[in-house]
Image 1 (cartoon, rainbow, N blue to C red):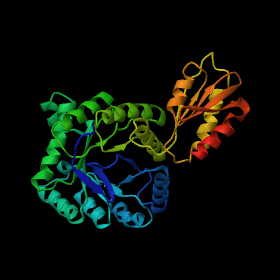
Image 2 (image 1 turned 135 degrees about the vertical axis):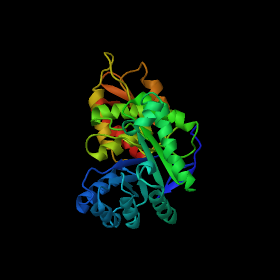
Image 3 (image 1 turned 90 degrees about the vertical axis):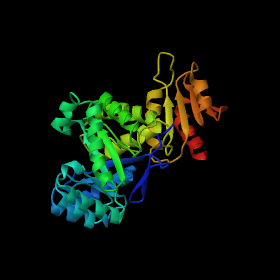
Image 4 (image 1 turned 30 degrees about the horizontal axis):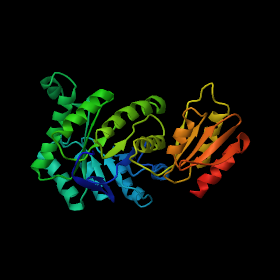
Length: 348
């Protein structure tokens, strides 16, 4: 069962409550380069990104938000560190959300200015605690970087906003260590009802980072924890969205594409199953149908898996049976399998 949280909105995207889990990414362009940033955001939109974050290191970047907003469709979050004036400028230029830690901004008056501006425009604030940015005194208090020090750090920031009667908040507690991340979110879920932005920070390249993120994000989602996700990869941010969407599909939290179930093959397989699966994947890439297709190599598990799917193949010697909703509909020679399977997919 999914954890019950407050509901907030980043632009028109609902987070928490009964809203679907959204997928976020962050541009790696120079935000001041409007053309490059718009181009990348449009690519992210095409991949299915729901929300995008941009770095705001100076006032030129904050001013660029106004121009970028006019040319993209998804909400934009400004990533701010230390300088409250950059937050105010980003708000003035139409940003939909802030990623800012109020405890790092300075005086209470500076935080109050940000809160008042956000309140006026219904802009949520994400408090982002990373294991590498916890204050030394908190680390000492809790004997190191652990789930206790991470959650305490988040609570410290939350109290600053709550004291100003501001509750339009979401929270992240990320570490590069998967187990620590899971423990921190689990502990925070016991004491906070704000929606959580989840992910494994600085997880690595698309290869290693995908594995770490899938384990960490997947573990939390299976516990019912997580309202919006970001897969942090060293590379093209479009890859982050592709991986994030696939994590949701794998857990049954998103049904927008055809799911392929295929066996690993063994010595009993008598058709070229590996190449068949690759060709089917290529053919169905742009088909938005919530179907399950089983492509199995032999009669050991094949008929059973095929019967469970909307469509399925159970391989034989140079041929295969095609199942539809558990019923055999035809026997097809190997060289005709791809064409016949695609015809049946198009009928559904």
